[in-house]
Length: 105
Image (cartoon, rainbow, N blue to C red; front, top):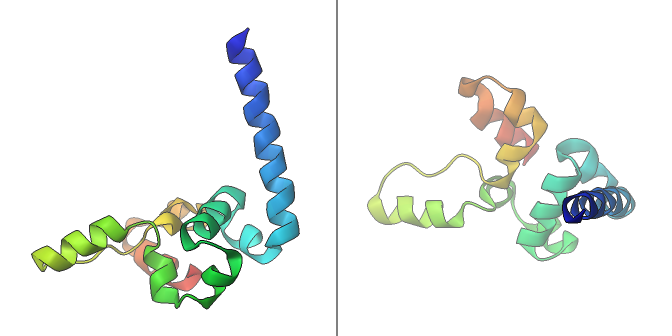
């Protein structure tokens, strides 16, 4: 009974997120989807803050920990953060994922 209740609640939250994202950021929603768009806005702090970030920052948004670890160790930096979860990046062949995430950012 509790599982069914939680499943229904999750479905209602998903529908709410879909409606809010289409109202607030329709272009972002169309490009990366509702969930990834909401996570990007959340990580940036606001939609205006996300819009002001350079594309290189948007590309690795959500991977700050890995970025600073790579800079400290002088190894290669991450190619993508939250954008990796966008369907366009997920469907791309492995050798093109970095390029597609740059274009999306």
